[in-house]
Length: 232
Image (tube, rainbow, N blue to C red; front, side):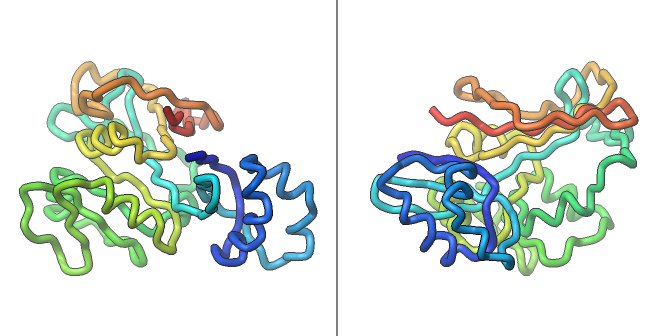
């Protein structure tokens, strides 16, 4: 199977119909597709993000799973007691606009329970998928996923919708990475050293290589870096 990621469009059916012309080539990239001029007569098309997956005969679009975190320079996403008071909300980063990319969250049990105890606002239009082998129920409107996560995650990725954000925690991220399910990492490196705390990711079965997409330096000194996860 070949999987490639690049910026594409809105309607899945419309795009699949166009791109299937290129399936025999097994070469898909933005430059190739736009070079044929297929999109110049489509003013209604809006750019968004999809994975193009080809198995030799079929071509389909998948939502991307994006793991986004604020992390200290020594790799922690929270202090030893779960503190977040060191995270800088930089005026250069439009968090609300960034979150428009997503309409679903993948949440681990510990993070989910922490959110449930807080009085933070709920995000309208976002569906929560809670990953746990110990919980037996979740809040109304949320979806509990337990057992073998691979078929469940792949099913969600193939559904209509925007991209999916991994919203904690370290154990869930490790599990998703071990199964090759994460497409992109987006990390805000805050200019602070915590010395100890909750790591970004738990122990992995093997190293995961990333490919740099973009780096931005914000006025606070925070470095925002995005990566694609390299496939084996």
